[in-house]
Length: 180
Length: 102
Image 1 (cartoon, rainbow over the protein chains, first blue to last red):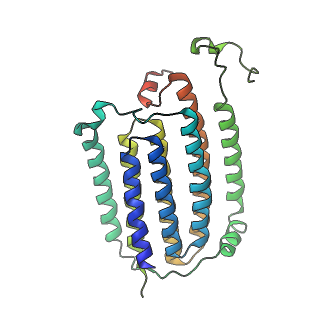
Image 2 (cartoon, chains in turn yellow, cyan; image 1 turned 90 degrees about the vertical axis):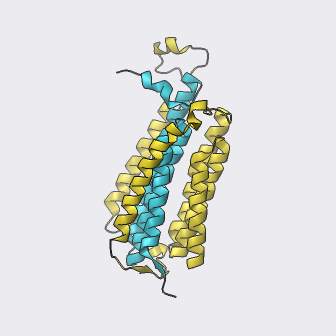
Image 3 (tube, helix red, strand yellow; image 1 turned 90 degrees about the horizontal axis):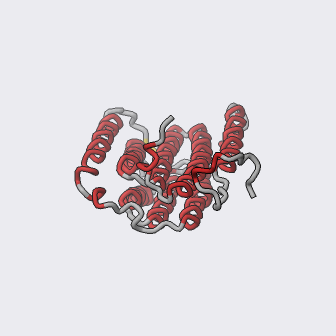
């Protein structure tokens, strides 16, 4: 269990580094899928198999496939943002130092917390989660349904395809109902 | 076998969150910004799971479900905005949109 936790945690960190330093969009998306699957293995090692399965099904299976579809639809090239100034150290030293300072603060806080809890891999089944969700958390489930409905309406309105014949200047013509 | 210390799980979540934040500040392409947001949301969910398994309570995993719901909603709206950005500017660089006023 410990070996699975540390090994998949290392894989997750390395794959995430691959995501944020990659130049090809497709490679970065695939690295992110690897990172999400490694985090799902961390969940399995911690004793949360329902959360691990959900991570694979929803995150790696649905959200990242959506990313892959959009990358394929837009037909992005690898050198979309390989501008010469992105490689210069002045552009990545500042954000990296800020992120390192935040990481140092977080690690110092966690290390000085003194929680002294150990995770012994006791399983939390889907039954307990379902009883929690549909018992005391029922209002939150309804609110998340509202959130998903709002996201559905927003995505279908914003993401509709414009008429390719129109130039961007003439887009404010009456276009209330002209979606093909 | 005495288990994994809770601090190690939280530190893994902190490292992933910091990597996502660094990517968010570093990259100027909207695709990478969205992916960095996904990394940060995922690290938050990992922290919830670690807390849930450390205390043997299912509430953290219910919260993880809500985090996944939020991530799905954010990804769908963000990708729709990204398609619009690409159709109007034929590029994904967010610096192109910085001249938008009002």
